Amino acid sequence: MINALVIGNGESRRNVDLSKFSDHTLIGCNAIHRDHTVEHLVCCDRRMAEEAINNPDTADTNIYVRDDWWRYYFKIRKHKNTKTVPELPYKGERKPDQPLHWGSGGYAVLVAASLGFKNINLLGFDLYSTPSHKVNNIYKGTENYSKHEARPVDPSFWIYQIAKVFQYYPSQNFKIINDASWKMPKEWQRLNVSFENISQYTS
Image (cartoon, rainbow, N blue to C red; front, side, top):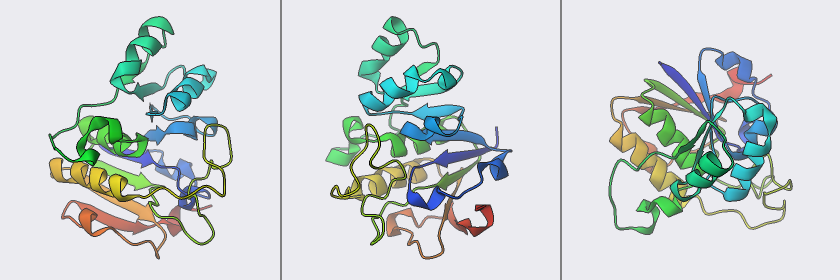
């Protein structure tokens, strides 16, 4: 296992041709299963997990859920590939250090790191709202998602938590693929983190 593509659901990935990542293992978040088949899918929200498990196209997908839901989905619903999200690689006292406050995006990056991939690319991790995308998510306004006019989510927890993955997996290479105008958070500016312009991957 060498290359992994962790796919967030930010607007920047809307026109990306995923076939250009044919040599990557795909790790996705939440509703990506509606449009693409991924090998690993992280659903921290119970409604998202329920939707994913009910989709027949995920029969061979490893679906990661929170520990307290795993018994229900694996033992009662009998979805053979249901797994628990990985344990955090560190202990902390702050609110964003608690597993309950980690979301699907952070856990998806952690899944890639904990599975041992050497090169891990992050696509669609836009973090910030924009004037044209107040809720920066390609699934906004659909079932189980915020409405278009909802208040944007503060990305500070996402930034902090993903930075922890970069910190605790220093021998793995992480690359952020996004628009040229996207700003790398200072917390992500580490020797094992790089940036690549998304333009070469859009169709």
